[in-house]
Amino acid sequence: MIAYFIKYSDKFYNAFWEHIQIVVMTLLISIIFASIITILILPYKKVTNIVIQLFGAVYSIPSLAIFALLIPVLGLGRSTAISVLVVYNQFLLIRNITAGINGVDASLIEAAVGMGMDRWQILYKIQIPLAFPLIMAGIRLAVISTIGIATIAATINAGGLGSILFEGLRTVNVYKIIWGTILCALIAFIADIGLKTLEKLAVKKVEI
Image (cartoon, rainbow, N blue to C red; front, side, top):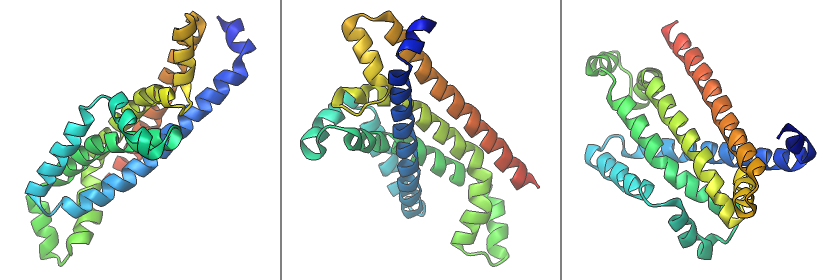
């Protein structure tokens, strides 16, 4: 099995790198969109609930179905895959961001208002730092979800490790299936370790 990997290392490396690119680009765009949406809906509790429910409904739709719907509009390729993944991530991110911010002790908010802080200062200096662990939990979930669904994106020529897995299934090549799975798990493991480390550093900074 090792010999097979070494022999086709270039192919595995290219698919591995493509998968990382899809995950990173998706995550960055997802966080930006989720942050903007959250800021807009946060003052309105009913709107927040409706938005979360809508994205929750979208999240329950099989990814292949959404890929099929967007292909006539966006065509095949990575851009379509990233668009679908960004939409999927909104539920996980918005739900956790709003839950974290709304979970901040009301007495702290009242104290901040009494000190003369405006809405943005309270959000930036108090709510986001205190909600950071829950926000990071949402980001970790989004990363794991993206890594998994990105493999399915290979069906629309998005590249990544999914191309290795599907090729292995089509040709009944056990080595491709095993190495594709291992590399996907490796990306998830590295991402989880990195995000947990970032969370610990951020929490220590807040405590200081």
